[in-house]
Amino acid sequence: MLLHRSVVSIVGLPEKKFFLYYDDTYYGYMINKVTNVLYIKDICFVKKLKRNSHGLNKLELYLHFRNYIGYLARKVCEDKRRYWSLAIIFLLYHIFKNIAKLRIDRAYIVLKGFIDGIRENWGYEKKLLNKKR
Image 1 (cartoon, rainbow, N blue to C red):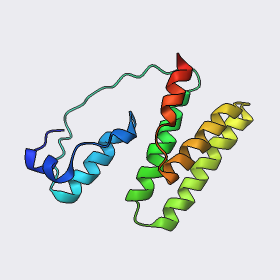
Image 2: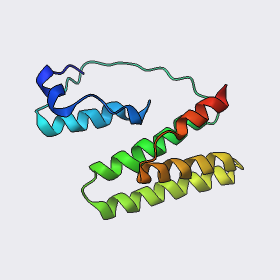
Image 3: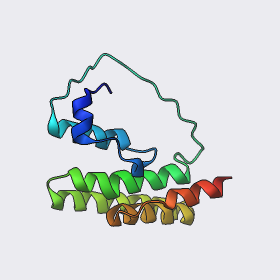
Image 4: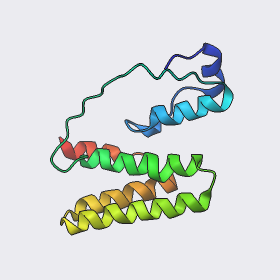
């Protein structure tokens, strides 16, 4: 993302609270509110992620639900009824999918991430990072 200094002085720096997931999405959204954005379609960046057999690890799962589903989509979506309908369906799907696979801890992390995003609670990811070590 290339920005003029004046845009950064208006929008500020990216939010540290998003930590890893959707910080660039939210920053792009905020920039788009104050200036025109030029998208270049022909450039391709490939980000290789190491995945376990269950998809996202617990930290990634938590951050996805907190940053995107719980916070960002709610702030950006103008049709609140549509947001809540889709968010609840998405949330229930992931909770029941994990319970069906007997991964209760992952179902809890999905719910915790969603609720923390709604309440704008930041910092639980540090606890998850410490558990990994």
